[in-house]
Amino acid sequence: MEKTSAPAVTYGLRGRTCLVTGGSRGLGFAVARLLAAEGASIALCGRDGERLASASAELEREGATRVMTGTLDVLAPDELEDFTDEVGQAFAGLDGLVANVGGKRGGGLLESTREDWQTTWELNGGHAVRAVRAGLPHFRAGSSVVLVSSISGWKPRFPAQYGAAKSAEIYLAGALCQELAPQRVRVNTVSPGSILLPGKSWDRLRRRDPQAYQAYAERNPSGRLLNAEEVARVIAFLLSPASGAVNGAHVPVDGGQPQAGLGTVPVGGPGGR
Image 1 (tube, rainbow, N blue to C red):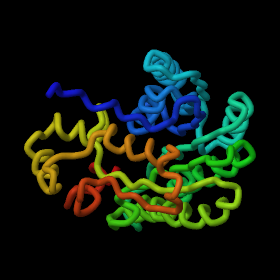
Image 2: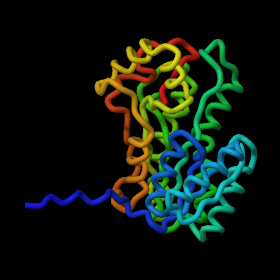
Image 3: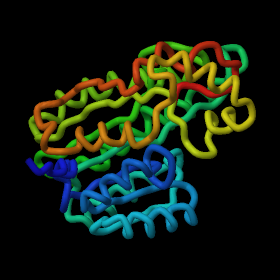
Image 4: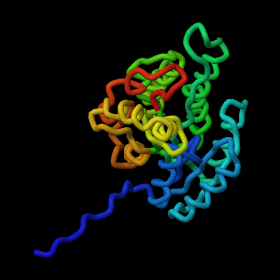
């Protein structure tokens, strides 16, 4: 009997509209590329205008129906809100939002300042709250919001401010899913483990000290770090109609990684995601 090839995986996102914060590189760009291949219209924001322009051109080559970009800092008052509103109006509504921006400031408890903790919160949970609030007038019935947390949000590791902010995002999804369910807007969280991204901390360690990198990677059950596409596929599923009954869920995508940082990593070294 003649063998037939398996059909290509599709998430049913053709013609849908999605906004990805921090979407010009790393995990955010991996999500945007997958959405582009699905034929979605995509909006990206980030701080680097040149990088956004390059990302936009690549997404259009990948098949995106339409791409919008906004050069902004999510910590700046009103910039994220104004861009989200602009996208919602230009796309005549939003079907998906991925709150992907994150990061941390400061070191340990005695080395970090009140401002470090406040900034870390604003980069993670704060920006997610603002993006969802700004998107709410534009969400169509059946829309999906994905908050990108981290393994650090549920497998604690110092410095505490990052994990605390990421943990807040997990709680946030569980609470907002109940509040927004009557408007048929779903909210879920994805918590990636350590991802090997070109030019980022784990990649720099791999180049600088391959043996140390491999020792960390082998503490994972799979013996390796994640790649961005593996996490992007889970996010695409949560954005898709196929996950319509999934709401308020926390979905770890960490390959069974036992703890953030793959064990004992010096302060200032690679963290969770």
